[in-house]
Image (cartoon, rainbow, N blue to C red):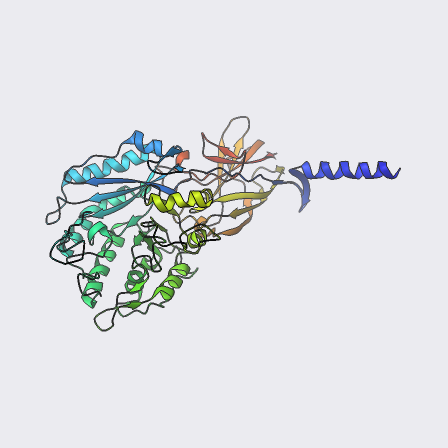
Length: 507
């Protein structure tokens, strides 16, 4: 008898553990609670992950190629790399080398529009940076390379160019993930520059008040040129501090707060790109106080790292590595701090093709797969509780729990929709949930809402799905721009919907 009881108990436990759905009673109506299996797939989700690189010179404009861009969405090997990548982002460096002293031509602007149309067709988004030169040369400054003159444009020329670009940036907002400030200095990195204060050892080694003001004016113009729900990345955190708080701002200035985040203000729209991530203790001048007319340059690694750590919870961050010299710190844990740095600064994207020496080391060190998965957001559906029945024109209680196990939240707005799809007619009814996906920070996300059924929901049985499409009308129906949950057996490739694996009968 004892053995029979034990065997029965074991069978009960096995049966209970194998179930993923359990009918429960809540508020007098029948509901189904479901759990889901997490996927380990490297998902090609919009506006995050490794990015591909393109370089376009105005003096020899070679447009973006649709088939090449579309191919980036498929996992492919990278020349010189020991890893592969699938990418939904393309960084485009637009070199205005033929317009250093003149207005941008109508032909260039037309071709830029066409590049955006190409990206739209290919299912990718762009990270544009406009610059004037990406070459260096030696000269009459012994021991230094590059040497002035550097080849960038004056403030007046830049401001006119931004004014020319403004309507085209607005028209193509849908395929611009974010922008980088650019314009100033070699590579647009705001460092080696003829007109905005040379902070290198070739110049004064510091920036004066007028240098800061000129940089602020350029950033202000670009913020005004780009729609308010898109962010602009700057190269150093001190520029944001001095834009927000003034030229005399201290390096310990306050970071964004949750209440200020995603508000559309300039403060909320300035993010960061680090083009020498994990390259030295201050990432080659990223975390440095460049002074002003009344203060000297100074080390500010701790203060500026702390500022950026706090601020980047709410802003877009990305960049590239540039050197493998900073060892062992740039290696995988436990030897180095690579993954913890990505997490601390809330990285959403990184260059897939540079610097390959350091990037390859993460393969050897065993953390590359984790980095690829966690750049930006990674949303895992954990549990749902959905009603099994409802009444026409009635309301339902919905509970959805997710985990964002990525380094950052989505940085651009997009709706979160509960979809009811009629099993007979296929008609889809849309219910927009009351949530801001940009505040789905790393950790648990709980959605518990009471929803009134739309008027187009008639009697019948409906599949329940979760949809997180692009915010723009031009891309909303394109599954390439919808977010895929990191779960097995939930994604519908053809629609971009995520199946919650439940159904509701409406009477």
